[in-house]
Length: 193
Image (tube, rainbow, N blue to C red; front, side, top):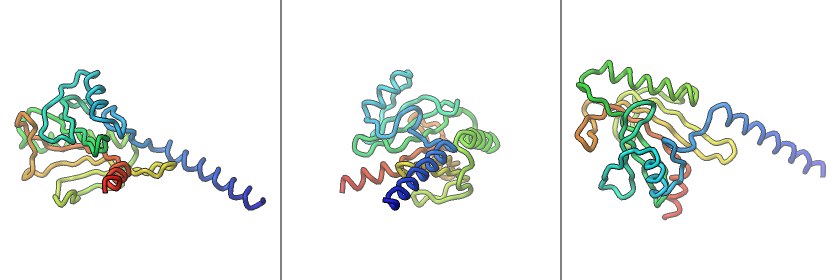
């Protein structure tokens, strides 16, 4: 009985400490106001309520809208696995000569600053390889929910000149912000196997 009581008290203390860690740095509960796991219909409804413009895409596992993120006009992508939202990314849209590298750096640094104010210091910064492509400067936040142990990431990626992307209107996109529900994606992939 004494062992049970000691074990119970240990678990209570662990749970209390875990929730205090969670409150120190908020866990991203979704992207652009859309909760993780939302269906395509739910995403369309949420974006419609904001009067964001739905764009056509050839990818059936993605919903794309023109809206805003971090106060910037953006093209927002909502990536689905099955019918569950697992990743969102924003491409800020700015009409200027893309050779203005100082403006690009300022916009990148402004976004990193706002995310740092919200989520605390990032875990990684520098040049990284993602999906076997070497991008420009990248800042990465990694989160683990202290209760569910679910993992999440946020990446702010500055594109190298050689790999500029273009939006549906042909405008060049110079950096992106990516939110991902890593654990949810893994669970859904394993479910489909």
